[in-house]
Image 1 (cartoon, chains in turn cyan, red):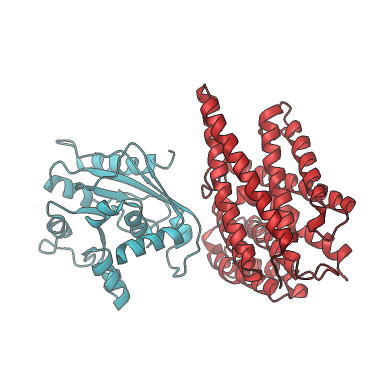
Image 2 (image 1 turned 90 degrees about the vertical axis):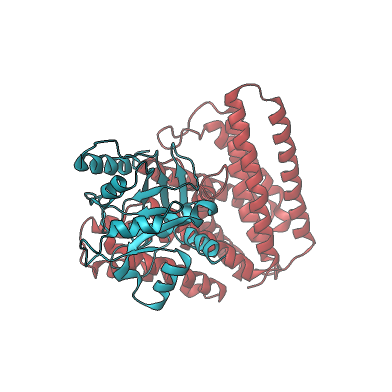
Length: 198
Length: 316
């Protein structure tokens, strides 16, 4: 109920039009990976999913941001069911990939931003996506391109300007057997960038 | 602000209902009779447009029924949605973020508030003077000088067309016309009806007889046949409706011709911006029509001139 309300509200503010290009909405286990431009990114992608898929999709977000303040904490845990990652103390014992795999189980899908940080251009992907695919075989990866959200709520601003945004879901990819890390990450990055021209 | 509902208004609304019923019927007949795929697509789009017209007329009637406050709220919302489409299409930079926030959440509501308060002296200069100055001041404070004049001009233009011009529609309700007290809602209806029926008739004549493009580089769908047939017929309709206005028949003819010509000019101008940005429509809000701005471009240009002509010649 809260989730549906929140999804509707976010689509209203961000005026989102959703496009599925060679990809069907589905509630099976997937990883949606997208370019990262704004705090609104995952909210808008999450809202763009049909309710059945949304119910089993957990965004991967930064612990330091989403555990600050009561409201954020509430939103992250109760509304988005987010998987919070500690960005600062990454070590062998505190490995984000372990945390993510545990959170996925065999039911949950993820929304993640392989760039790791927000920027106006699509930067290089960090290796987390690769390690996730190595550990979890046959994972379906859906590229997502979000447009205009950096104008609606840019980095460093806290008041949104209600412009129109677009979310494009593209044809899924998967890690090929024996594919080197660099090649895979570059291929994943171009899968996101390709959606810009569609 | 005043808006009453009298017998003439009931006739007008029944007239609109009749037009909608007839066009829905024609749409159904055409749908049965199409044979090839190209014609099917055109009829499909026509029927989508007619369906959207039902919704738009319903909302418009509700707004007018609730009197001044409903019309203010409706056109305020229209301005907000149109500005949103306009700014989305015109590139601004990070340095404009706060300026845009002011434009959406302070200037736009304030303009409609002043119209609602009947403060002609303020609402007629708020955007051309105060917003005109505020926009560059707020943007320059961020220190971003890249394409500065261009960015500022785009925001100013968006506010003028989407907010200032559109706000002159509900502003019609504030005019004090001798012998026409509490009847201004019909004037508002008249403006919207004549301008929109002109758009519709231009489309119909253009689809029916259109051969010679009037501005092939700006809008390939606008033809001389559509222009002359649409503007001519809408002027005739506007003249025939003189009895709901404070105008004499010949005055209604001049007014109708003026607003339909301005409506055409508005549609053409807003198309030029779309061509420049390489898009077909401003948005996808209204099925078959495109965005809000695609539907109201003609009203943007007709409303302020209609308001001032009426104010100058017909108020005490």
